[in-house]
Length: 106
Image 1 (cartoon, rainbow, N blue to C red):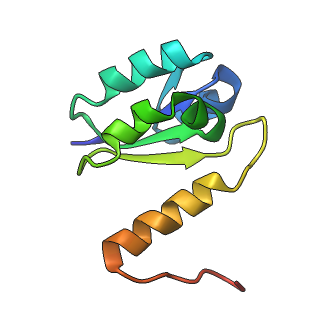
Image 2 (image 1 turned 30 degrees about the vertical axis):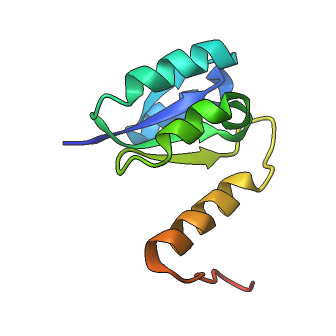
């Protein structure tokens, strides 16, 4: 059975344990890169990464984006929402279904 991981700063990820996700703390890009590498072992279907850490990891995340699994998805952290997470999900949907999907009152 596949699992879901959340990667980012401690304060942003600790609450996800309550809903059954596995939380991994990475307070700097080096720790984040090492942790992401270990999470790519096939146990996880989805890896959520805080937007700030995602941006700091840059090309490292890009090198994994072509993989079928796990899906790597940006989420807002406690430092705020940049909108990049929603944009990333939208781009993934467009690639998967070949069309944009409109949510809500957009």
